[in-house]
Amino acid sequence: MATFFEEVSEPRETASKRGRTLFEQGQYAAAARAFKEAGTEVDPLASYEETDVRYNRARCLEAQGKHREALALFESIGDVTYQ
Image (tube, rainbow, N blue to C red; front, side, top):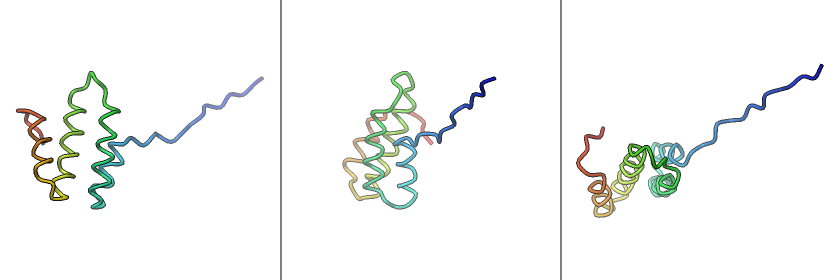
């Protein structure tokens, strides 16, 4: 009788998760790049994901002193209640 083993792999690290890790480490420029990349991974049917990516990228830009770019991203989120 043949035995089958289910292949178990580590969960793929997303750009968004990498961005959060880099932000926590104070690597804001790298985190901003990761969140920009995460924008390409967003599910088009989950608008909250796009909001999350924009918000986190704006936080990175703000932390780097790029206030105008950060403000533009914050404003692009629109009138939403976001924690």
